Length: 165
Image (cartoon, rainbow, N blue to C red; front, side):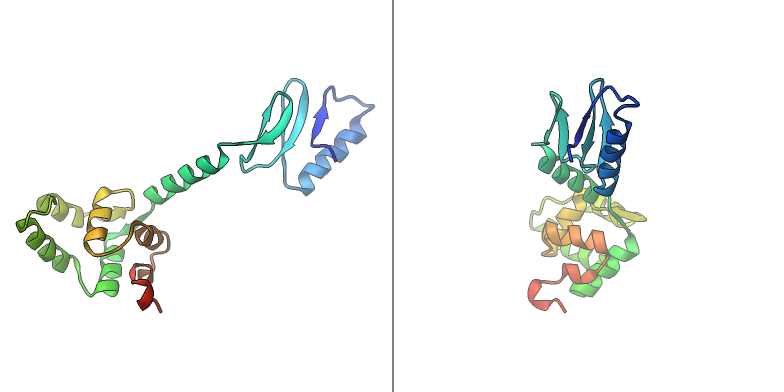
C-alpha cells in the first residue's frame, strides 16, 4: 500500500482513499495533509514530509535524546524519598551527609554549605537541580544511577553494582 494519497479527493477515488485510511489506521500511522496529498507517517516523529515524499527524520534520535534529558530533569521526589533512598543505600541521612560535606568544605571543597542546608529543607527534589549531582558524586553515585533512582524511586538504583540484590 502506498503511504501517499495524491489529491484531489473525489468520488471516483473515494474507495482508494478509504483503503489508504484503513491501512494507516491498521498500521497506527498518522495522516498528514498538505495542498497536494495525504501522507501516512509514523506518529513518533521519526519520519517527515519533504518535497512531497516521506523521508526519515535525520534529527529524530537527537530529538529523542534531548526529550529524554528534559524528562529526566523534570523528575522529582519528596525530600523523604531522597533521604530514605540515601539512607538505605549508604546508611547516611541528611545530617550525616551535611557533616561529611562540612569536613570536605573545611579541606577546600567548593560547596556552599549554607545553600546545601537550604536545599535539604526543600519539600521536593528535582533531578535537574545541580546540587543533586554534586551530592550524588560526593556519595559515590553516578549521574546514571541518580537518573534511574529519580525515575523509579528505588534505592537499589543507588547501590554499587556488586551490592544490588
